[in-house]
Image (cartoon, rainbow, N blue to C red):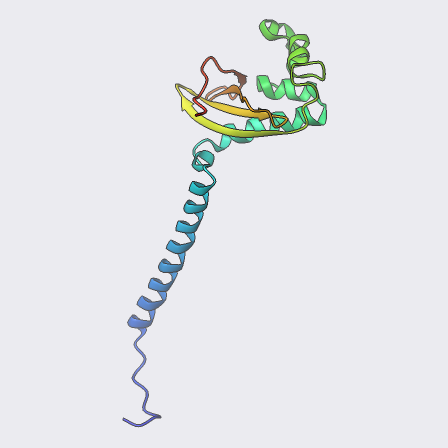
Amino acid sequence: MTLLDAPKYDAKKARLMRNLSIAGVSAVVIAAILFGMFMLNQPWWLWNWSADHRVNNFFTTIESGDLQKAYALWNNDTDWQQHASQYKDYDFNQFQKDWGVGSDYGKIRSHAIVMAKKVGNGTVMGVDINGGKTPIFLRVDQKTKTIGFSPVELYTGP
């Protein structure tokens, strides 16, 4: 065999090598993402994404000062003003006291979801407000997508 005598091209072997290369690179990328999520202690991002997104939107709206829109997100009802009597158990005035500038938290400038867990038919989320040490626990109902105060608290550790 001389230098110019190359072996015959084997399409089957080339396809196998290409597929193995793609699978190997994909496995390394997925492993890196999972390792990063584990190291950040955030593996729940994927399982509770819709509830996480809803609570993030809620707090972002409060941070911007639009309490009427935040109340609509809380009740999952953009037309809540048309039938405000439906929400008399937790009306807008009480909502303003709990989440407005005069609340226990003062003006809410930042938030961070520190934990989340599915409990029953909803997701309970621990949220640090303004860099606080103790999270507030909110619950997002899986079916109605409403946000509320959680009757249970998650263990935050020592």
